[in-house]
Every structure is written in C-alpha cells, then in structure tokens.
Amino acid sequence: ENGTGPSPALKRVRSPMLQRDSLKSRYSPGRPGSRRHRRWMNDNHLREELDEEDLKEAYALDYHSALSDLFYGDNMKKWEEFCAMDEEEQRKYLKGVKGNATKPPPKIPDDPRVL
Image (cartoon, rainbow, N blue to C red; front, top):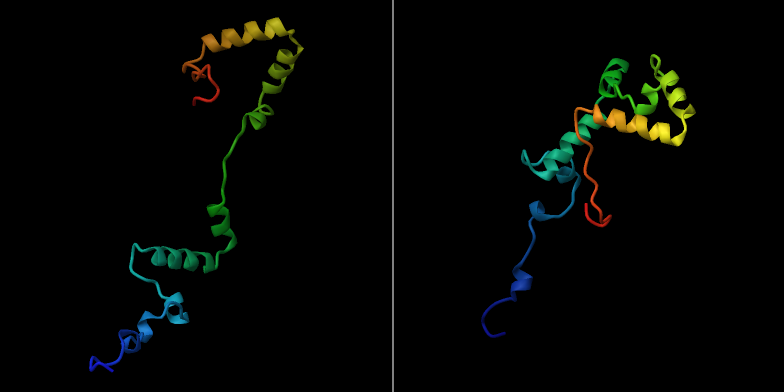
C-alpha cells in the first residue's frame, strides 16, 4: 500500500441502472425517435388485436400485372392474333406500337456492366 487507497477497479461498482439487460429496460419505450422506441412501437402494433375488417383494410391490394390484364376485355383475342403472326409481322407491329408510344423506351447501354 502506497497510501493511495484501493485500486480504481475495486472502487468501480455498477449501479443497477447501468446493467445491460433487464426485463424493465427491455419493455420500456425509450426516448421518442430512438431505435428502442421505434421497436417498442412496432411491437405494440404487432400485438394489437385486429378484427377481420382491419385485416382486410391493411392487406387490401389492387395489383394488376400485365398477365392479369391479358384476361380482361378483348386483350386475349389481340394476343392470339399477335402470336399467329410470323416473326417479321410481329416486328413491324411492335415498331408501329413503339412509334405510337407517348413515352420513349428506356435507353439500354451497350456495355452490360454499365447501368
């Protein structure tokens, strides 16, 4: 003993508030805007009881792909007519449709490594 007292490591005692994990801190909301608070809010929303109407509203999708649009109206007839054309007629048809498009097609670079 040099008269300086116990070593700093022996003086250091962690308070209960500085413990890394506890049930109290795990389920506390944290400060608004913090990651803990966002996780707490998400957890509360996931635990929320939803009735059938709420689920229908949350997962209502109005998605139509080009394939699903094929089955509406006379689109299937047009598609079958297009498939019956030979390759040259299809190419001419597509060039004619491309010329009538309101928006130009995206430019594709010559080098496939460049996007």
